[in-house]
Image 1: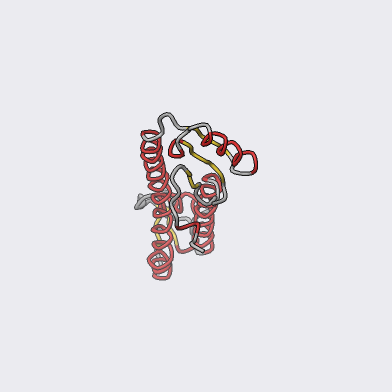
Image 2: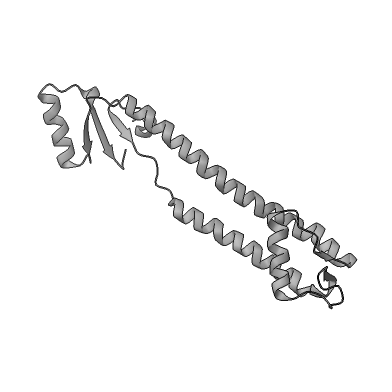
Length: 171
């Protein structure tokens, strides 16, 4: 018996396998970004005595708000230099932990943006191509007992099979 999935049946529109909603994916990515931010704030804050704020050079380290500021500026840009690691250990943590986190954060943001734009563009072209070939078609939603009966009735009354489009989640 031939595999039904591999056959292309004229007049039958096969729906793609359901995937998670774009909102789920966006929420997941947002939570990952927040996680990266929180983890980096924690790293910087725990090592706060090895950072200096140029606005308060005599202070022994930085505050939690300085850590949050430093993290957001560092992960989203190349930094301003107003808060900087001063010990060798803090510089190594910056080089080998915070820099990869910065790259992950930027890839996550850029990747999300590109994926949204690519998906919207692809969907636009897919819809345009689909609509260009969908003139004078009859769309039957569901191919259960009633849908099958409706299609049989249409074909028996002279409607060309090529002009009938069936929308059903199963093949």
